[in-house]
Amino acid sequence: MSSIRFSDELNAELVDFSRGFVEHVLGKCDPSRLIHAKIDLSDWTRPTHIIAFGKASVAMSNAIAELLADRLAGGVVLAPESTIPEVGLPHFRYFGVDHPIPTQRNVDAALHVAEYARSIPSDHDCVVCVSGGGSAHLCLPKEGVTLCEIVEQTDRLNTSGSAIHELNMYRRSAEQLKSGGLARLLNHVHHCETVVLSDVLGNDLETIASGPLYDREQLIEHRIIGDHTTALSAAAEYLKCVDGRDPITTPMASGSSSDLGRALARAFRNDPDQLAQVIAGETTVQADAESGVGGPTLELVLSSAVELSQSPSLVNEWVVIGFATDGVDGPSQAAGAVVHPEMLTYRSTLTSALDALENHDTLPFLDSIGATFRTGPTGTNLNDVCAVCRFPPVGT
Image (cartoon, rainbow, N blue to C red; front, side, top):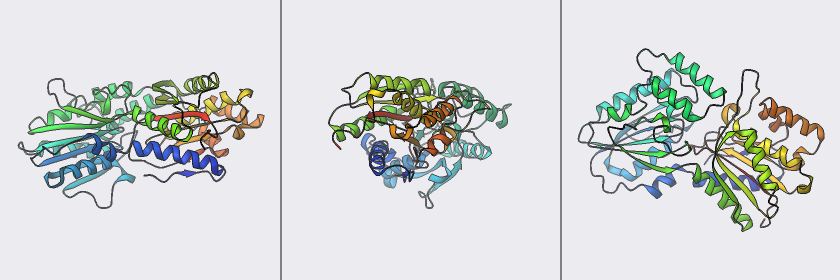
């Protein structure tokens, strides 16, 4: 599990609570744990290959390899550079790739995936491991489309706050391996299945990683081992453990981070008997060239905290915590943030918070009050989770 780094300014009680929250969620979202709990390959007898791409590709491929044991024939893994092991699986090739903007090394890696898929013997099997970030990793432009064009469109859609469905719709039209392109290259193998760690709300197979194995004419089984509800359930479980009551949970959270943050705060404020409100999903920020540095989860946390700070009846009895399960909240390089009312005590601080929200410049402000925490890439990706709760909880 990633090492969680909190600000030295955060008091010990908040650090302990926040560390427990993050570690519990990430533990439940661990790809290896999910695969071993939900995948059974004991009846597979043929030599089997693994193709993996996405932020969880290393952990997923390792777990599948453990299940296959001596039936493992080889494979190829595309992953964030920092997650690639010094010593990998035998007969495997690993490629460090970039996200969210694809680079030439992504194209080179995707080209190798295509070549490897074609080379698998027809009497062998294949498991494809797909996780969030896989669409950017597996970038192979169609003839007549340049990498520069894909980069420009990806950047435009990312900064405009577009949902993942819109971005991946473009990628399906512009790239060779999307919309079932990889499935068609694997059409000759004896048997192929896809194991998915979904970062798409609703688990639309055509949208997850832009649907490289989703071909309407070639039905390849997709096994979804985890999604944003996995993170949501884990967060609720942790909060119940420290207080004994079930929090109210809201899945499929989407839309403006600021709007959702305020709505989360109001729901909590209007139910004084409730321990906590927890949401999980994919929120967005409509940034532009004039915007500062921040991420959707940082904006979600800060907007919720600002709304609560303007509710005198709550005094100092709340905390807001949220983070991106992949460990990187947009361009901010922070995983998330935790805010307690004492961090917004002075009027000047609250004014600065409002300015940060208006300018989408949440990272510098949250850093300045000691609210952010960092994990680095976690090796999983199940969207974002945010909770507002009584603090300290009754059970602590």
